[in-house]
Image (tube, rainbow, N blue to C red):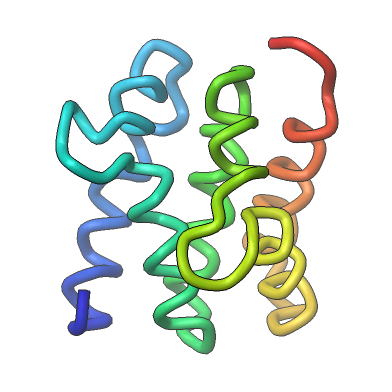
Length: 118
């Protein structure tokens, strides 16, 4: 995960699949790969914290993925590298205050994470 452009392109490719409740479990589990899709999004956001488009894509994806209980737990408890999902989301919010799409994705993620149940 060294090339920002490749990582961003991969995230953009996966993003539409996170919008559908039927697909989000597949994306979250990464289709059986060694690392979950949630871990991939989170690691990318932690690896490239100043890439605004990558942060935007990650926040929106996490917002959609946080719709079900299993994903909520995975996002909130994600400790890969530096801190959990809530920290990654709020850091992006603070860093890119003027990016409306990113802010909406962050609020969606935090809202979905805070809801009880599915």
